[in-house]
Image (cartoon, rainbow, N blue to C red; front, top):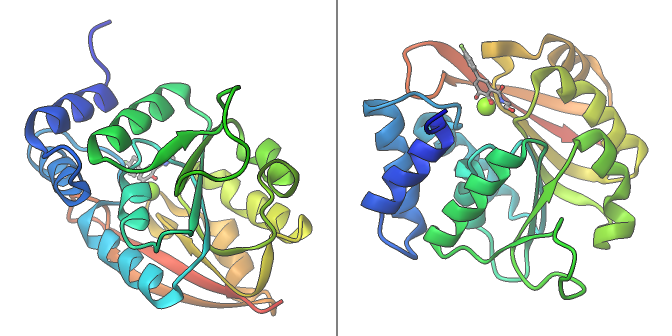
Length: 228
Ligand SMILES: O=C(NCCO)c1cc(-c2ccc(F)cc2)cc(O)c1O
Ligand SMILES: [Mg+2]
């Protein structure tokens, strides 16, 4: 009983970050997780690589697999122009709830698309879907009127990276030039995913060495461009 780690993050942010200021929410999470309690956000070091890839890609349609508390969702959303759409999928309802409350504190234009009564079509930049990625990915075209994603940030269960990437291909959700950016390819690791994107002729893959969030442990992100 008592509080959960995501709740402790939320309470710290509500107490110490400025309402409506997404950068202060991001830095409050980083300061809590480096000084008080570790948590599995992508963090500030790998977050800078994520920022650079978002700015370089200038995506209009973004998919994130694995919301957790929404830290990387907010890092991405703050760099997107109005009119861009960021869909984030989380299967843990407690994580999704905390993420929603952090988005509210940050003043992020976010909507829980799993809610029943909602206006048709996108009225906001961040759309949070509650459920399993393997179930939701095949529904994205029909339910959300999405054609292809320009950028996919993969940060959910490491065993799901490869099957969900294959699913994105099979559902026609990737176009030539679509960018996949995968967190944790070294720690905890996603060996089958790495082997696939590095050996498939359909991807041009590049490793960005870094460190596991808030720790002096090696990790890195893999950027893989789909070649169609
Ligand atoms: O499982 C992860 N994400 C999906 C959550 O539904 C995850 C885990 C870790 C991690 C954990 C335990 C450890 F000892 C080292 C790393 C780090 C991450 O960045 C992650 O994204
Ligand atoms: Mg991660």
